Amino acid sequence: MPNEQNLKKFTSEYQPEHNGRPKGSKNRSTIARKWLEATSKGENYLTKQMEELSEEDWQILSLIKQGRRGNTQAIKMLFDLVYGPMDKNINHSGSLSLQQITGLEVK
Image (spheres, helix red, strand yellow):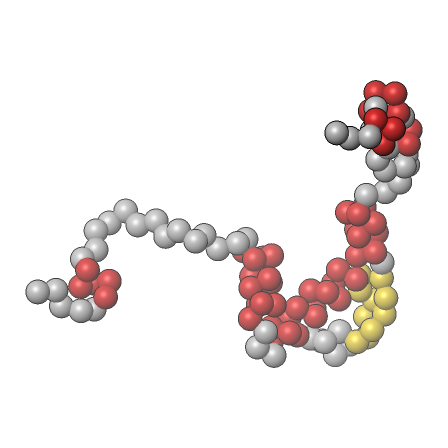
């Protein structure tokens, strides 16, 4: 049996001002957006020119650079950003034979 002194009664101890995130604090997406909008000057990997770009721009350029080096995850991220995620299902309204799909002759 639990010790009654260790049990907390929710109704008597609930204080809305002391639960959850403090009033006026920012959530993570607001903080991330702020830093992605920050700008800095550097050499653009693609144009080889000094440019002032947002952190978001630098991150996209970094993905492009990694993709050019053969990083398939970076390529997938870029394509998903631009074209949306690829469907895993292929919808086909016509008819195909097993031979057309596999290239093997069915006996």
